Image (cartoon, rainbow, N blue to C red; front, side):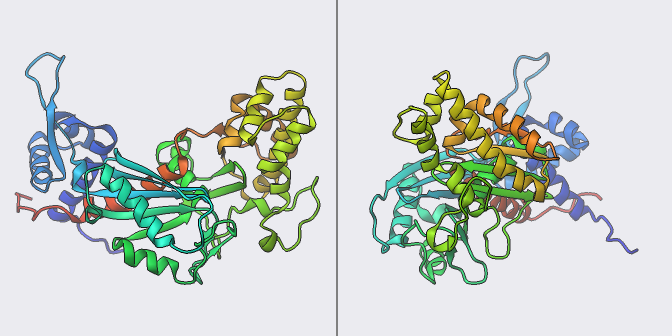
Length: 399
């Protein structure tokens, strides 16, 4: 089998990328430390850093201290070379943030949208982006990419939003084209729970898991499925829409698309959680508050938590039987309100209902997982573009 020889230029590009990834994950680093981590000699590491600094990809960031001998110059990624924006869209608001290339959030904004009409979606998105960009002291032209998370999923065959009838203004047939034209930078639009899974995969518990499920529980129940390290979206973007999953213990829901409900939603969605708490004498205004109250109430609270854990486990058992993940991440405000106690109850119940025994962990992303996932998704692609193509002309060093 023929192979492509490793030319000096190709090897330098590979070394540059390896160094950039190390500086991103472990920086700031000295020339010596970077050389040790990459296996490069001191002269080669020096040449590498000179190239990257000339390209504006890295910058000096002080010196090391506290060790014998002279202080060493430290280098870090120059985050200001590229910026991305992420948006988390719900029926009640649009939350936006801007991050530099290192992932440091430099601006954020929240646009309340209660009772909005189906018109003006593009204008609202632009206002949310401009609010975060403005707080960062930037202009929209400085953005390299924008990622937006919404309920439901955009069907790749039609470009239209499905599984989210409760989000007015996002179902126009040419909305994605209109958004892309108005934003004028590369645009990603992704299911919100999928983005929460991307955050978990990039900076959370699933960094070392190639096969995992993220179960999201708030007003609605949803899931994201990652197989062999990649999100599984399905033919119409509907993979993970487990709210529609028929389950024992609930009436069979027909016309689920029109009713926007299904068995798992009727079993463990926000409103059923409130009804469960009230049936045991616990009063709360929100599902999160109901679960929090259950944690503080012996007797009735114990019964609420046990039943809620059972309902979650019933749905998870159906998912596990099909996907067989190594890890399940529990996320969303209602589920995480139950903390480790609820997680343990779900783990025990699931062990009785399913043959596979995946680990169950509470999400590691506690501050807006959807927005974090949008930023991580945009950053991942942007880093590939910047790190692989933005370097300077490479000098011809001795091979």
